[in-house]
Image (tube, rainbow, N blue to C red; front, side, top):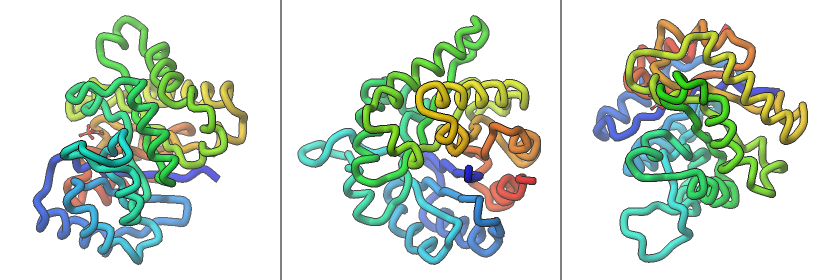
Length: 254
Ligand code: PEP
């Protein structure tokens, strides 16, 4: 059965005290059913603290915002997927548009990161999304198809591991801009992505995968977006930094 997911990507925000206080408030107030999973993606340096706080919660898991493409060795500043696994991190975000844009991460590198994460038993939140220019030129469907084909679908052993993948559709023009994709635009793309998965794999895989929306999703628009049949939740940036707005998004499922 497909899961509803609300993931908070804190990016490079919150100091330690703020992060802990936010998680404590969330843990007191989160009240969701068994089909809903909340995922928090703090900075690497607080992951252990946040994991400790969430240890006894059935509904709240922890993600890393990235992982290295390398296994180990002289790669200063990098964090290996195996290290994340060793402290019981469950998810890793791969392919966020900020990593693609500011750290030159391309589809080939992201494919290797997905393989590294999956082979270390981490689940992957794989991000894809088009620029405004691509959408205006009607290239958005081709672009998403190529991002998924080159980074995910070309991984031979992926079929058996699709239950460990969440896809986040995040149009770049909507991230941090206050301009979200309309419900129609988001649903259309989610349905397209589900169709690609059906064509590549099978109907069960397509039905079961959670496809979440990211890009200025907030307390005001979440319930309309999440009501669509192919939108299974959200990857939330700015609005995940306050307990009130994040809780309100979590409570947006019908
Ligand atoms: C994001 O960066 O993944 C994101 C969706 O950000 P925001 O919610 O702030 O647009």
